[in-house]
Amino acid sequence: MAEITAAMVKELRNITDAPMMDCKKVLVEADGDMTKATELLKERGIAKAAKKADRVAAEGLAGFKIADDYSKATVVEINSETDFVAQNEGFKNLVKATTEEIYNTHPADVATLMASPFGAKFADAIAKIGEKIEVRRFTTFTADATTALNGYIHSNNRIAVIIVAQCDSQKTAEGMRATLKQVAMHASAMKPTTLSYKDFDAAYVQSETIGRIEVIKKENEELARLKKTLKNVPQYISMCQLTDAVLAQAEANIKAELAAQGKPEKIWDKIVPGSLARFIDDNTTLDKEQALLDQTYVLNDKLTVAQAIQEAAKALGGTAEITKFVRLEVGEGIEKKVDNFAAEVAAQIG
Image (cartoon, rainbow, N blue to C red; front, side, top):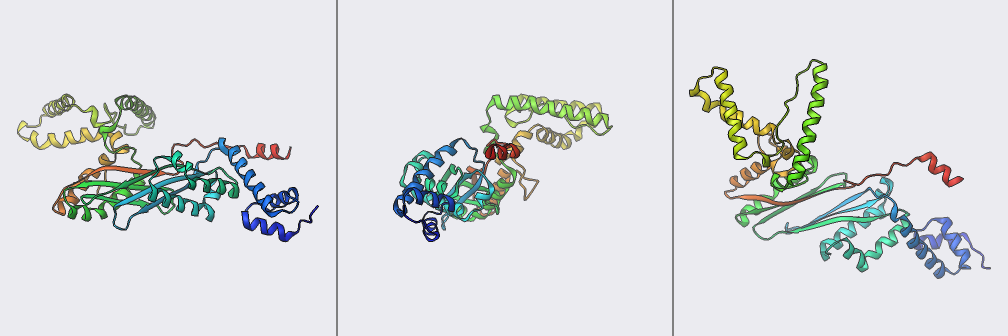
């Protein structure tokens, strides 16, 4: 039996970055054969990776890369089990390398990326780091001469956004890049889930309408108990519900109220537009929360994002319209497992 020295353990650790005790164990099993010990660690690292498949990886980092000429941009989300690992330099380097790989090779999906030679990097990373690590999702957008493209990654490296707008000319496209960067920052903070209210599914809107109205009614019960001003209970929550008939009825109701208040009819045309705008504002809360183009722009609360884009393009002497965007936030939508730490410790020492 070969003598396993501290120097041998250190050498194997330097080669594999595996834990010290694991290095010593496989060296004993391999009777000091460094090559065989390395293979044993690799095999067990892959086996450990497979065992980690049922764990929840809800932490991690976002990756972002944009071309110097703004012709292409990539965002990617890579998950780990803990934030501690997400701050590991090895993990950060993996995120950077993965973003570069996706940016350069345009894989069709995560499965295609993992099936490529690059996918082996993840098995190696899991063996070294000791946690489940996975690519969750990624998107790459490209732009031609009349397409403006820009993006943003938040300082915490957990949120990344790309915005794309179709413009009337190359001049406008180039001039709109700064505005798109600002809109990307807006999207980072305001969390839109879709581009426009036109994208909402009718069943989803109906379900949200019922739920939101009930929430406001319950809040009003508490406000009434406290003798505070009640919140307005909307009839609708999205512009897709405000048909011509609904808007016509709202206008008729406004005029009827003005008549009841004894307001002279000759001044109604000065009051009705503002009142109708308030009706629309009160009844499109879903749009303002979830649809990027319909959100109130954070840099000018008198405009929606769509209006801000139109004004910026007009100032350049052209036209522009946001056609697509992507916003990735690490862990978004993943249900995290709540561990009982005491029970976990007891199970390990029991």
